[in-house]
Length: 118
Image 1 (tube, rainbow, N blue to C red):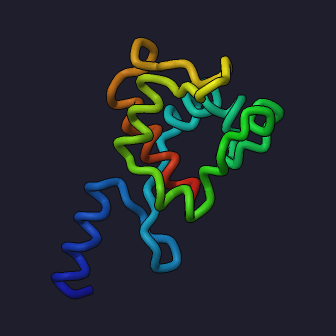
Image 2: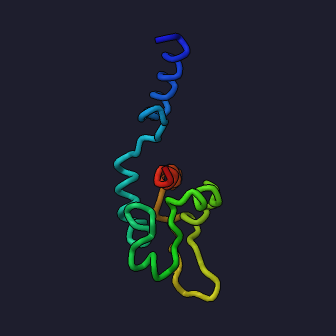
Image 3: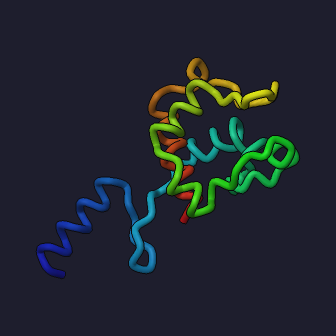
């Protein structure tokens, strides 16, 4: 293994990145998955496709689609998680989590949503 390869492997390990079939994928923290299932999956689905009854009723987008992943920024996701989402003319929406989640949990959820698109 060359020096450059060893250095790249060390950096990847330090960042918590594993290489799978030549592709880098963020390792998912079990606590983040638990938070996703507890706070998000009832509407967004365990898989992020919003195929739940609530997801279908509210017209929640499929977070796994390349178009959605490209369109929505990390900052927009953070704002939605922290401040909630309201829809014009609708009473249903997403509750804010700014008083329920720590900043590192929000960052971890955003990173987790990004893994759903791969």
